Structures are given as structure tokens and as C-alpha cells.
Image 1 (cartoon, helix red, strand yellow):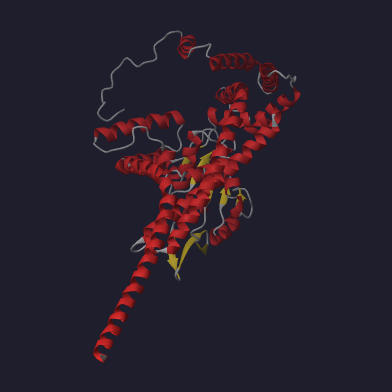
Image 2: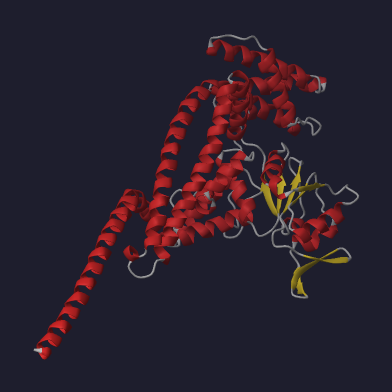
Length: 485
């Protein structure tokens, strides 16, 4: 009987352990089921977006070699050139890559290859014009190994750098400052950004070690020799240079030490700025809302990117079965809730922004017309180097015309009044600074450019008038076409 009882007790203990084990497994399975539902609910909505992103990434991965090769060429060689010449070179390089069997994007855009959308939006908020040429300039400045020297006659780059680096306590210096070397030394040591503005065609020899980044290790820290003193070199240090010269001629030994970037304003960039100014004056509440939406949109996209990175980090760092990791599931679940909220806010913001943009576009004709006028007076420097007019002066004149021209509730009539007033105001102000012999020529240029802007004069006909129909092509063949372009 006792043996029988002992056997039964042993069986009872065994069954009890099995029961507890099964209860634990049932509880674990229920928790896994709950976590699986959270995981599916949390990440299920991302399937389409992530599938699309994966396809795009695969395509970019395939074209990576050619795109990076072309990007390197643009950064190294094309910074100093105009938008049209850059585009021409990039198209030619893409053809050369295709002929050589190097995969690259059919439509290469530097901003898409090396640019980060969140960073680019922050640059635009800081004052970088929104046209593709200016964004490419920003990408070149951000990625170049050599310090940038920006050709900036209208002050666009100056304004952008000052706003972008304001939080990092940017120091602005000139070569004519008595203590510029001391300021530079302090900034290099403490990692504070420096903007050297208004430089001419020659640089101070004291800058050479800095431009060439001639750093060395001394006592375990990175140092650089500037003039007679050796100072510590902070990795956080950034150096920017700008010149107001329209067409500077830098010697090769200077050009190879810096990254030359052409920040001459483009028609698209100027149109966007003038549109903002006229809308801010005519409909201030609309422009304020537009600016607020841009800031909100930038913040929303930044948060979405951080959340996505967090989700991917949790998924990649989770070991074993992710359903057993309750912390990871909670992080994913909370991240998804926040992501959904931000996504909804972003949709509302984008819809509102489209409505505002539609209203703003009503003022686009005056922005286009005024842009044509600016580039007409900018061309006067080709006639006489003294005829140079700054963008702030032009904008101030434009603002005065908005205030002084006759008001009207009819938008078309208001735009016509503003156009007539500003054109006449600009003509009178510019004529004051011209020699008598050049006034008629200026009138002709202004008239022709306005008509070209409206599409009433064809470029071919204008060229025919200027050249008298004489062929400008060289009739003689190139005898050394193998090496001479």
C-alpha cells in the first residue's frame, strides 16, 4: 500500500509540474498572441510604404556607383559654373557612364543622391533659395572636403550661412579686421564656425595651413599651425568664405585649395523670394500661416524620421523571437501611435499648404516680371563695371512700389498697377546712375527682356537682329580634334 501511495504521489507531482508548465505556456502563448496583434497592428500599415521604399533603395543601390562618381565630379569641378553648364556636363557624364557600362540614374539630381530632405528643408528655412541650383550648392558646401569659397554678389550665401550657424555662435570676420587672426585661432580651438566675408581675388597667406587642413598630432590632440602659433584643432570647426565679386578670377593655386561655389541668384530663386515679399505685404496673414506651416512640416518630418529609425533599430537589435521581447513591442506600439498622429497632422498641414499656395500663385505674374527686370539691370555691368546694383536695393525698391502703387480689389488690376509703377520706378532710379550715352541702350534692353519674358520675342529673331544674319559658326574644321575640344 505504501509503495502504491509513493507511486501515486510521484505521478501527482509529475502531473502538477506538467500542469504548471502548460499553464505557463498558455499564458506565454496568450501574451505572444497579444504582442503579435500589436506588432501586426503597429507595423501592418507600413507594408506598402516600406515595400515602395525597398524598391527605391534597390534601384538606388544598383545605380550607386555611377551616381556617386558623377556626384564627386560635380562637387570637385562644377561648383563655380552656372546652372545651364552644370546640367550640360551632367547629361554628358551620364551618357559616358552608360557607354562604359557603369549603371547610373537616368535623370541625375545631386540633391537626391547626396541630400537629406530634412536637412534641405532646414536650409530653406534658414534662407537658402528653394530652386534646384541653390539646393545643389548647399549639398556641395555640406559634402566638399575643401572649405567653400562662395561667389555671392547678391548676399544669398551670406544670409544663409548666418542663419544656419546662428545657434552655434557664428563669428563673422573680414581680412581687414585688425584681430581677425586672433578670432580665427579662438574659433578653431573651440569648434565655433567662422564666416570670412568680402574677400577679394587674393587670400591672406596665413590662411594656407587652414585651407590645406595641415593638421598634426601633438601631445595626443589634433593641432594646426597658424602663423607663428600652434593651436588645438577642433573637429567641430567649420569655415566659410564669401566674395561679392560678380566674376572673380582666382589663380589656379587658390582654386585648388578651396571649393568654389557659384551662388549667383537664379530666376526661379528670385521669383520665389519676390512672391513671398508681395504676398507678405498684400496678404500678411496668408504668408504668416505659410511660414508657420513650413516650420511645422519640417518638425513633423524630422519626428517621423526619428521614429522610423527607432523602429528599425528595435527590429534589428532584437535577439531571438521578437514576440518574447515585451519592451521592444511596447516601443514599437507607442512609436506607431505617435507616428500615426504626426502623419495625420502632416496630411492636414500639406492640404492647407496647397490651398495657400494656390492663392499665392495669383501673385506669380508680378514676381516673374520683377525677376526679368532684375536680370536686365544685372546685365548692365557688362556695359560698364560701375553699373552694379545690389539685391537688397532692388527688393527695397520693390517693397516701396507695393506700398505706393494704386490699390485695387480686383487682383488683375492690382497686379497691373504694381507692374506699371515698379517698372517706371526702377527705370527712373537706374537712369539716374547711367551715363547719357547708355540710357537709350538700357531702355532697349529693358523693353526686349520684358517682351522676351512674355514670349513676344523669339530668341532666334533677337539673335538675327544683333548679328545681321552673319553666321557665327567657325567654317574651318578642327585639325587636332583627338585632343583639342
